[in-house]
Image (cartoon, rainbow, N blue to C red; front, side, top):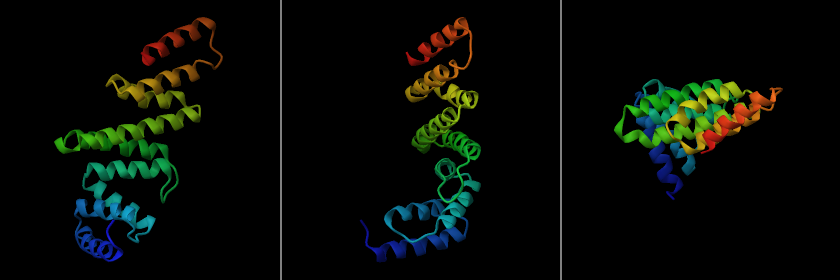
Length: 172
């Protein structure tokens, strides 16, 4: 790991570029926090927002994750979903960013899981369906789970059987 002096020097250089509006510097300054640089959560959120405004896919994904976990802001699943979906769209336009697509998709599955936990199955399924249709194994599994959990709520035996059959399709 770098020593604290080199972290401070790196942070100082990145801050200069970040103030000039360079998205890569704004994002990398946030990443330095993981290495021990002293940056407040509110400053991190500000930098993520600035880099996201400039269309940096990883910054948009990171901003979505902050809303998902409530890092420096209240948990907001709607904002998380919007930023993660935008991150996927931006990253798909950049050949180097396919890993960002995967990260955003995994976080979207977490958003859907939270909606399922809150018994908002239709919201969960609306997020999971496109991911499951793309063949994401985790999304298919969560789609099956959401359908099974949703079908327990006062349906007739025939309706329940149809949902069980549909869930089985997603599990396979």
